Length: 282
Image 1 (cartoon, rainbow, N blue to C red):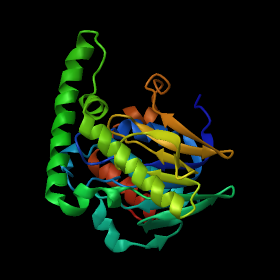
Image 2: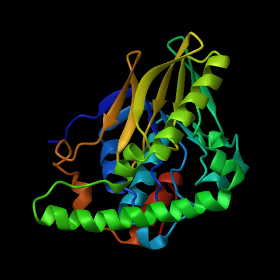
Image 3: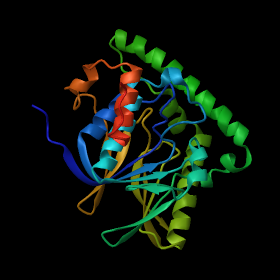
């Protein structure tokens, strides 16, 4: 018997980096299938157009897109905020169709609280002045994830706990810690000056909900993390924010679709049929 879908008013997902070696599309698909949201904010770097590779785009990547299309067709509002890895979409800013909109930033009123959503790369000094270095770092991150994945396979084989190289670097290296703190302070400062109660970002892959005080004023800073290592999302329900953390044990009863064989052509046909019911592959 299938579990009923969990209702949630709003979810924020960012940094899924679909099309890359580290994307956790299967886990993301299971999460999306488990909820019934009213509004979805895709807060940047959803499809990675920098390091996109067809060989990394498996059936679960397609299933994620298909599930998002189902949400839209069922009346769920989906806001796609462009990030740096999918910045090509910024040429389509303000494109809107049947509850789906591409934008650069978003402001919503959540139960009387002024809320500001944006990806966050606009406050990244490296992004603004050394884009080649940022792209090089992106390739380096992918390589780190690939090595990490290989090492974890051996650790699992020998019954050892998995490691996260990237998390270790971010938490231990002073320069990384300083960068994260600087990013948060800059974002919060601008949010306070514009009288926002909540500011919601992605970009730095550091999931968190915390209240930050600057100049005797407070704002709640939220970051949705990523679906590479942390597998996190932000959820807003009943006037409260929570940080969702994907737990493999909670999803151990896999969706029957996980074992359903479909080749690339069949999946594509299903995807197009969701957009155009009159489509036929005959």
